[in-house]
Image (cartoon, rainbow, N blue to C red):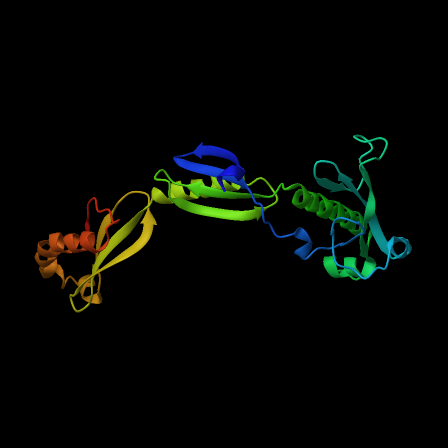
Length: 261
């Protein structure tokens, strides 16, 4: 896959690698608002449909309850699609032409927007969505679909994702920020004593500074009956700390305080 590497960036001790995704899922497999119907002798484009020919399609999109946009394809060192044509780069039209329409019926719009009545702003939004669907499909046709791999300082992969139609650099940096931020936090060890005077140790929430806390619990402590156990607690502290360190290799213990009610 090395030959499809698009970009590499070092960020906070991690390497972000962007690749061209050479086998992405077609966006026409998604839950789209519009129906994309194309006719072309060489390429299989758009959605599957039951229109017999272009004339039948033109008559259909001309109905009052249908909104549609024309689809133009240019075929020159690769193919690309838009809704406005390519006269700006080929005024004679040698390499481009209309290949179909993308449309949405009013029923499709009602279902897609979850409304009973279609207002003007809903129609405008529907047209914008159809335009965006064509832009996304053009990225698929032109190979502008990306994937990323994030590696740590040791070269181990910590995250990856493919089939992305927008540049994922900011997303990758956010993932690295999260990893770095998480590494700054330490598990908190808490030792407590039960009513039957048994010692228990557990890992609590993550904290920014390594810490160790001893909490003495039980109703009898509130009446001062547990004071006689203080010497026992201190005598076993080193043993408890040692066992915690052995069990939790990533546990950091800096100090501890004896907390009495």
